[in-house]
Length: 101
Image (cartoon, rainbow, N blue to C red; front, side):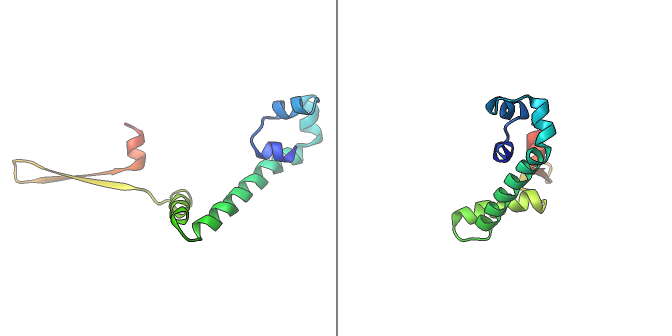
């Protein structure tokens, strides 16, 4: 049951699989239901960390993801437009700005 909670199954789904009432499940196994997600997240974080600190292409991808989510890194695009007025305009767009489009 702890694993099922860690995989993201709802308490209703777990109760259905175990043929029990959802409220009884929550009352009897509150700790397992809560700790399942925490333990699963910790295992995934450990795996990602090992990949991010390893070698190869996967390490680069994992490291970038880790730094974007944990160290507040962000991708920045710079576009320069030049006009006839002898001026240049620079737009800085972050990934978060692009989500708004």
